[in-house]
Image 1 (cartoon, chains in turn green, blue):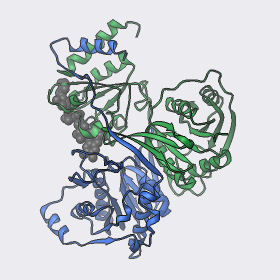
Image 2: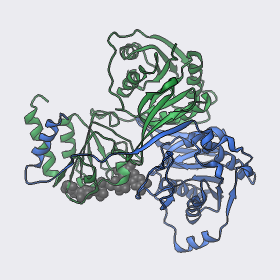
Image 3: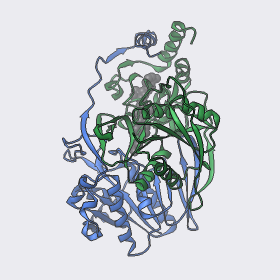
Image 4: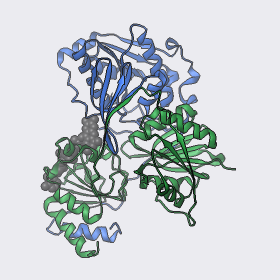
Length: 319
Length: 262
Ligand SMILES: Cc1cc2nc3c(=O)[nH]c(=O)nc-3n(C[C@H](O)[C@H](O)[C@H](O)COP(=O)(O)OP(=O)(O)OC[C@H]3O[C@@H](n4cnc5c(N)ncnc54)[C@H](O)[C@@H]3O)c2cc1C
């Protein structure tokens, strides 16, 4: 019998995030799937993970971000379920958890993976991008166990034909030995737009917006897109730091990336070069972003973006 | 306060970076530099000792030219530099690197307890931003990672961290490990005097044997993953560059519709 796969499903108040559903989909190729949620997750989460093929839902409480305590709880689950692979989405918090979990379970570790395969003998093979996505690596996990953090949008989420009805069990996380203390935690207000890391379409503004993101936002809303930014724009305070795309911000790999007034510096490219199609609007024909743009447009974003939005509304009046 | 900052020598991000045939980072292309994000780590440490007294030791593991990285740390205000160098280290993964750095931090602590270990948020050549967590685990230290702001007060380190879906303020008792982001500070640019002074500071070099580590625990042989192949991404085909003649917005819309992107 193939060993089960544990999938950590990130959720927001018990509603699984899209990244979690993608992971469940990817996990089905590796073995029977068991979902794990950290913090209160009830019937809605169970139904949703069942719809994507999980036969069990393990709920770890209390909800905490302490990686050591969570890793210990997950390691016990690995032990009791006999899981050979643990999947999670590649967020900053999860990567820390992945490191501690790999250490205590003596597993191979891959973070920021862009794809997942199994090789002969059940070994896990991952695909990663390196050096601002100018290189693609395939690597093999050399331990019987693997912990893999997969980037959002690596696999499309598809439900199973007949939904599963997962058994739900609750497990305690022992936070008593935790030395770190969370003094304050402020959830980020949701914008009403899709989550940047998970969005299929991202419209990004840089210094060229001069602080006026209205044209970027208008186009984003017509496209149902998330809004992103360069570090210049976030440093200037034009938009929150969480919108920063790049080496020190978030990595996105949407189907469509539209950059406006973005020069395409290497630090920025590191977070977006793996995007499906890249469209760039920039006043400078020499801007480096044109080296990687599928469609490059030399011109003024303040006239071009609104015109594109208007035309899209005309072509797709229902949207 | 005694602070150890772990830094890494990496290929310059502006340069032509690549992999060798066996899937390791090509270090033969010259133009190495201190990982830019580690400059934020050194800066945070130097600012803390400027406020609270004490001294900073910069620590690196890597081949001979990695010494440049600790030299840069000295120029920025570190008092001591340690370079762990051993042929057996080639091909080490993050787990082995964490073990080696942990052994070196313990050795440094023999001359007086270390209060804080500081790292950058990730290495820019890196496939992994997991080293800070692994190092904290190996040293059995509490961790306060991804700090956009760091303060130390009464034996407690306090950080503000911007996570994916929340902002957090976290406290940990010293000794602790902190990783800092590029939001934490603006790294100083060393002046001529600092550069000259750093030249005179000796860099301590340790081998695996000096740290009491066995070669079988590190290097490619001990690695938990292996690169099967590394391929440069093919350039994007059929790229189009147009200049706006008043209808570029319409053309973008048409392009998106034609390519089924809306
Ligand atoms: C350690 C480190 C980490 C970093 N991490 C990141 C990161 O994660 N993400 C990131 O983005 N950056 C990062 N940076 C910064 C990065 O190097 C660049 O400085 C930044 O990406 C540039 O932002 P920009 O494209 O908005 O600005 P600029 O480079 O100034 O480009 C602005 C562009 O707008 C164009 N423009 C101006 N007006 C118009 C107009 N009306 N219409 C159309 N185009 C116009 C200009 O031609 C220009 O090309 C980092 C830097 C360092 C040192």
